[in-house]
Length: 113
Length: 114
View 1 (cartoon, helix red, strand yellow):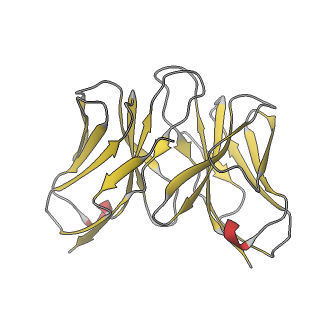
View 2 (view 1 turned 120 degrees about the vertical axis):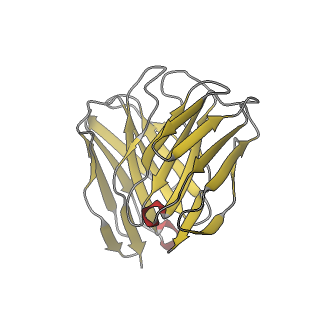
């Protein structure tokens, strides 16, 4: 079946640093989503991408839909302590009614003061 | 505001018990999903439903069943709980259509089976 890989698995950064993480797939996707999960909570959608090459921002977060349609990237600028959490990518190969997303294993981000 | 609620945040059950996890969404969404989340494995789809009384198996349906009698409610059932079903269970819902792909998640139910 389809699989997503996320890199890195975890990262420790200093407050104020920029963060980059990526998500790769063995299949071509038509949609990419990035979620953040705070400890003890469900994932919350950060950014949705629908077109190859698309670059979308949400505050300090920027995500890109890779040109090959097999990858996506998330950048966080000037990290703050509340950025701590697990970041998940999710991709969907088809745009048909009811088709499902595949989720990556997540990147765990820790921000040191 | 979009809302998905789950009946319990924490649940402890014994092996062999029948367990019901309830999920309710107030967004009139067609699609609803049940995932389990385990460290290092991310979210894995158990079952989903794209309409009332409709259900489809996800990637790991064994040991689970679901019920969708009303549009807003999607229940996950563990007929006979086992220790390997200890996990975080997440419910999600989404609208239909090409653009409305986003899944909205509930807060999760952390189930421990002893």
